[in-house]
Image 1 (cartoon, one colour):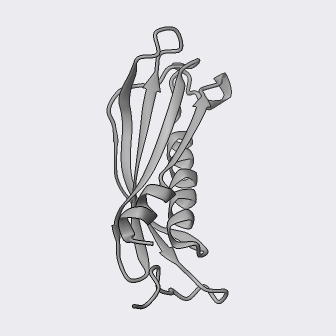
Image 2 (cartoon, one colour):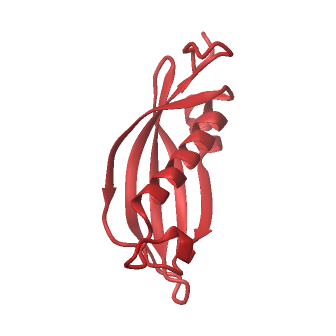
Image 3 (cartoon, rainbow, N blue to C red):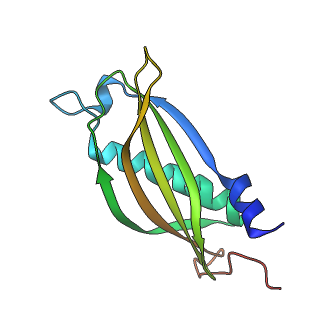
Length: 130
């Protein structure tokens, strides 16, 4: 399978509803909750790409563009944007969707770096050797 095919097959989409327990005192999604969801999507995406155990090593620049109010539908989309020897970078976008109109807008975006590891937690190759 080519790298492009692996990227396509590993793309991950998850839809969630923002419940009251996910929100802060002003009824918008907690940033920490959004980052947890992003980490989960990045893990799934990287695992599907590498077909190996992966761990998060960094979360780079998370941009919170618009607030996400309670009751919103959100779609998280993870896509591998870089593959190194032992790591993959996954860009995760969170789209805010109006439940009545269906309109979506980019609310949050960030990059996470995931490293493939063996049973001893030592980095291993993400891509098989040629």
